[in-house]
Image 1 (cartoon, helix red, strand yellow):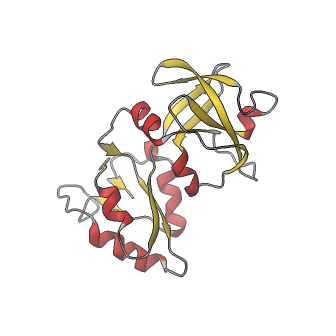
Image 2: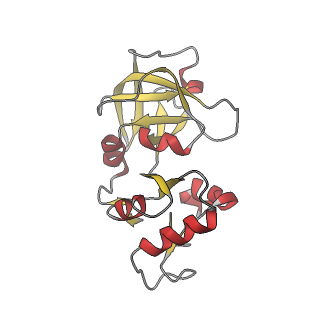
Amino acid sequence: RLDRSVLAAVAGADGVAKAVADDSVPVSTGDGRPAVGRSWPSAVLTRYELAEGRAPRDASEVVLDGSLAAGGPAPGERVVLRADGTARTYTVSGIARTGHGGDAPPAVFFTEPRLTALAGHPDRIDAIGVVAEPGVPPGALRDAIGAVLPERSGVPGSDRGVRVLTGAERGEAERVDALGGRGDQL
């Protein structure tokens, strides 16, 4: 995990249009369907687009993946979700759709503060997602981000202990839990 302060440094790197904390937590619906909890700001890193309603405004609201909402709750209605071992009732503020089927689990989007609380490590983040400014080549972006990262010694496989993934490599960061001991991801 990365110290949350690294996010501001990455956001200020040359060529970065936007940098967001990319934490995730396991979530299940009241009927037991598995999903991945993410913060709404991290939706910019995905194919999700808001199809109905609006973004969550406080800890009591969520945006549901359209597949979780099919035939179920609509914006303004309530849904029971289990995260961090506890079932809670949330108000659906919006429905997001991806435009593709895919095999990834559906998402539930929380506010950034709520997701941070559910993740249980408020001073650390799992990964940082970056959107490049138009026309910035991946290699230049990688170098600019690498230049602002803090030194971290003692992590095998990287002189800084943080991997900057671009292009096809980004898929490696989608499954942080599957990365094992390969260092922090950015």
